[in-house]
Image (cartoon, rainbow, N blue to C red):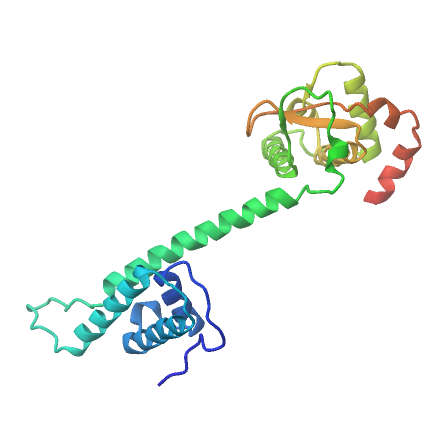
Length: 259
């Protein structure tokens, strides 16, 4: 008998298809040509060990065992005479289809879970409460992913502008911080970030402006908000805005981090 790939400890599976997929993938078996006798033997071995450990697998595992035994039996029987030009149906076809479909949805679920973890952790910080304003108006907080998506959209649109590349332009992050500061000082209302981006006339000013926004958020000088999910991003002064800019010294050191 072939050694079971699950002989170290009893793995836990969400269902019989998970178990079968694991047996197949671990042994690098061609899913379109499953050695049904070997897989059935290993599957039954898993059920026997689960039973010996008093693990209740549920009726779906038993039903799959019966299905595998039935497929194995059909493959041992002589093939029925087929019409000329017809090919006899493979008893494994339906099982292979179910396995492939299950694997597709399983991979999609894992991808969505990973995306959720990234979104939850990319901007996580034990001091995140410090970025929130107690007197903040209702609105949705903006994540780094939201900000990056907006920036990518602006870059894509900017590629179509004839004046997008301007030779010799030099704009620093500190200059863009000062630029944003002046805009916010001139308005008591939230300002649309997209409009500010679209006024830039080159790639380097755009990149410097994006970094300036990140720096101002980090410095707790501004807040980013959306009125609705996936909506336009607005910036406004944080309650610490005036305190941050009382001393201009921090701005002189900003560009050193981007040299």
